[in-house]
Every structure is written in C-alpha cells, then in structure tokens.
Image 1: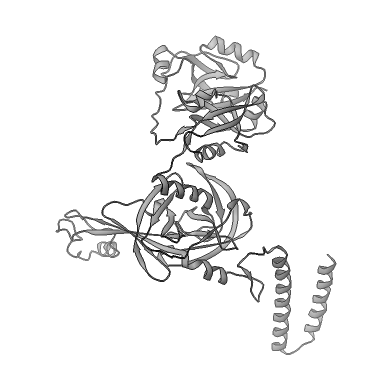
Image 2 (image 1 turned 45 degrees about the vertical axis):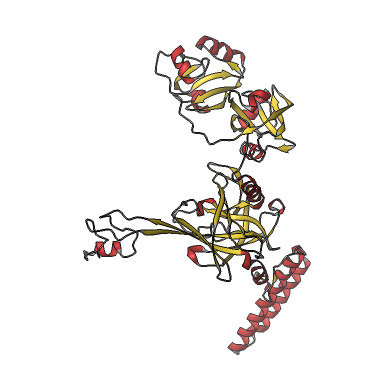
Length: 505
C-alpha cells in the first residue's frame, strides 16, 4: 500500500506541473510518458513475479505477453487438414451449394446448364471440409478431431498440408467418436513434432495459445486464458473439457492448445455459439485423454473401454441427507445390469460409488470416465457407501460396446390409490411387470404436494422405498409410515432408473 500511495502522490505532483505547461505538444508528450511508465512498471512487476522458468513467452517492451518465440517454436508441427468427398449429382437436381445459385434464383436469372431442374447432370461434385491438427511423432502420426474426418470412405481424400506447404495424402488409422479423437498417418519422416504437457498442472486464469486454420486461414494464432477445467458437456461422459476464452472458429477443430512453455495441453474441439462463430466460450480435449486414445488406435485400431454395467445419477443435497452422506458427492447406482461386472461384484441399487482405485468420485460424471479409462478385464477396487457406512468391493470390468437402448413400455392407466405424499398410484399388473422386465411396482397416476415437489410424475413406476421392494399400495403406505420424514424412492422412467428424495414437512 505504501508504494501505491507514494506513486499516487507523484502523479498528483506531475499533474500539477503539467497544468503549468502551455505548449500542447509538450503536454501530450508528458502524458504519454507518464502513462507508459505506469503500465510498464505495473505489468512488469506482475509478470516477473509469477513467470515459470521454462516459459517461451516473455513481456515485450510494453509489458504485454509476447507470443512470437512460442509461435516460431511450435508452428512447424501444426498442420492444415482438408477432406474432399466426391459425390455424383443426380440428374435434374439443382446445386444449392453453388455460391451463385441463390442469387440467380432470387432475381429470376436463367440458371446455367446443370443447375436448373430437368437439365442434364454436370458430373460429380465435391464436398469439402477443413480442420486442423498437429504432428505427434516424427514418423508421421497426426492427431485431430474425429468429426473433421468423419465423412470418409473410398471416395474421400484426406490431405495434410505442412507449414512448409508440402502436402501428403493421409491414412485414417482410426477414430474414437466418444472422445472425438482421430489419428492420421502420412508417409514422411523427420518431421517437426510438438511437446506435450500435463493438463492437470494447468490453472484457471493461465494464458493459453491456439493454432489452427479457421475458415481455411492456415496457421492462425489466437490467445486467451483457461476459463474452467473438467467441464462436463451434455452427452460427453468421457472427456473433462478445458474451457477457454481463446477465439476458436470453424476450421480450428483438431488444432493444438499450448501453454506458455509451448506444450500441448489440449485439442480444440468445440465452441458454444448461437451464430456459428466465436462467442467467448471454447472447449478443448485434454491431451492425456487424446494420447490414451492414440496408443490404443495404434495398437488395436480401435479404443477398448471398461464397462461396469450400471445406471447412475448425481447425488444432490436431499439424496445425500437421505443416504446419510455428509456432503453431495459420488455416483448413485440406480440400476444394475444382469450378468454385468457390477452384479458379479455385488453392487446394488442405492449404493453410492465414492472412489475407484483411490481416485475420488466427486461427481457422477467422474465414474464413466474413470471406468472407461480402464481396459476390459482390469480388476478395480471401489469405495462405496451402503447402509450408512463405507465399504470396499472389487470388480473385474467387461468391455464397453455400442448399444441401442429401447424405451420400456409405459403402464396403462387404472384405478387410483391415495397416500399422504399427494401420490395417486396402483400396483402393476403381471403383464405390465413382465413387459417392463421387473418383478413388480406401483404405477404413478398423479402426483401433487411432496411427491410433485420431489419430481414424481405420471408414468413413473415406483420400484422401491429405501432399498425395500414395493409390490402393493398398502405395503407402500406402511413403508412410508415407518420411514420418517425423509426417504428415497427408486423409480423407473422410460428406460432409466433413478432415485428421488422426498422430504415431508
């Protein structure tokens, strides 16, 4: 505080002196000198106090980060990727992707041959895509996003262009849609490569630099900071994304995200946008996730993931209190697949998985990633919470397969049964239970009061209360009477099973 107070006094004195200067040029010069000195002193102090010894980015003469050395060092290993797919044009079909098509049609100008309906086809046309990537090894392996090369086949060409303008036809070694990673191979040796860093060591607020080909402009450099880590996105259970405010646009996909030491810590993959362009939120895949995928694609041509065989849900505050946890954490098991690794290990609906092999499961989204990182056949130790205490169980993982889930039939309406929860329900018929592949339960017809506040709705099927199976309305009422003011219902909704916490006032 003393330094800043002294500095303020100096500025007041300088301001007083400047008021006495009548020459406009002299006044402008003194103002510029003063402000420049302030900026250099403050930014130089902040930069030198925290700068790592290995960084390639140093302050320039104005005290701002200078990324020039970093770009020169890593630029040769960043590549442009173009994908060309040849498609035959059906006879008489217009060409709406032609840049002049809409203009000619709108103003009634006659369309050239091959563009108007009913005219002969013009021959094959090509659809083109662009993206970015980087060389991970000197013998020609290149990492990029799976969606960059997704449209591939016998009529598709993938071309990799280096910074020195050399072009190579690329072979797609393999892709992994779950993590959006693809591995390419070009026929070249002694290529420049990137260094990889540890995303876990990066911090929110750090400077990062992206390189790629937005809109086809090769080797475009943008910079920003890490906005958040381990960000979860809808339907993305296997990637803890790095969120940044680095400007990323179409064509940047697959390009590297560098830290200040010139190490790749992520692969730019997605943007949040309502317009299709950059809006300040970008997401990168951590490089350790990508390298694990790369190793498996080289060895097996595909990615093998462990499978536990459970349906899970998040643990909120009410569920945590119901199950006796001190804080909301872990992954709550809502159902166990028959014959799965989880069933063989003794895992039950109502168990909360708190850790895997000593790694804490802070959120339900952590469990699919931790299990997916393991190879099939791996033995794991899980710390679970059951009946108000922690216990350890061991499971041997199966292999994850692509599966299509069918929606279970919904119970048909029937007669009502009441209760103090504001719940109208009835017992399932034997035929309904058989079609749902369950032993029995209650079909929810209407929910008001505490039941509605907890999220129950018509069509839900109540399977258990506090891990006790439910088969009749009368039994359910008795269980509620003896459960106290807080309990958890296991319900089936569509093809999913979830726990719902209910608290009575």
